[in-house]
Image 1 (tube, rainbow, N blue to C red):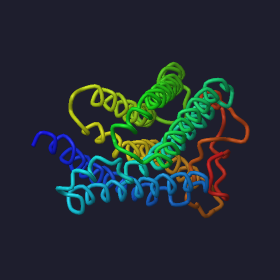
Image 2: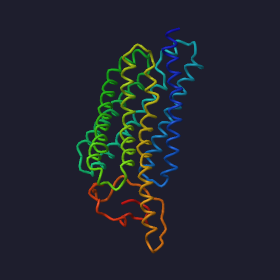
Image 3: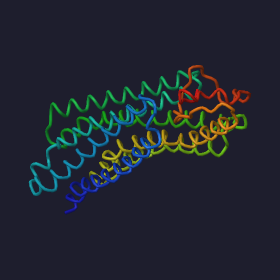
Image 4: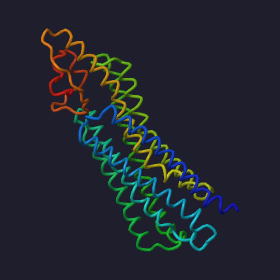
Length: 312
């Protein structure tokens, strides 16, 4: 009975958590498209790709639960084989992690006013190496597809390398966001065009968005090293949604900036004698000429490009 709880029961619990986490991601994605429907095409493409990968990851998790609880229930010979769904999961959540980590690497590069190159490059290299390791694991499992114990002895030692690389990547992202959104901005915050409250909200969201994947992978290591059976799949089946949620939280955190800039533009428009039409402002995270926000304290409100609907 204990073996069933630690195997089939663990997969069922992990599957339900996968469904619930995708519900949270879907809600965050709905909020993103409602608020930033005219966002840059690249950002929308990244969000849609990660949400589709999360959806595929959730469907595969549900199929795994269905196989073990309905079709193969009581057939212990089938339960001893490595599930095809477990192999398929290796094509979803590592790819999601790669996309989000690369996006955060670009984000850190933008926050540094495109001056810090070595940290984003190191993040991108670590993310690519981790993804290549998982790709090798996926190829070997597809080629062998034997008993769970035999496949575990083959891929799990290499899986530690993936975990270490992915955790190091998230630590680098976390450190970069801490520095550029909290430490440096706090030191120069009095010169920023936005209110301190808006920056606090944005900083809190940006820091929090990378803590979640980092904690999820640490929990994966802890659950795997303890005697809890397949309950470590709880992290495997939800980590794709965790990364996608982190991406959406970071993008949705720009809402206070949108409100602050919109109010600033409206005030400027009211003071102008010539009426002009104000379009939806596309809050951009990069500029053509990288200038730190605190270096633009002397600039006037006319530098907001109202006609094109973008914040330059």
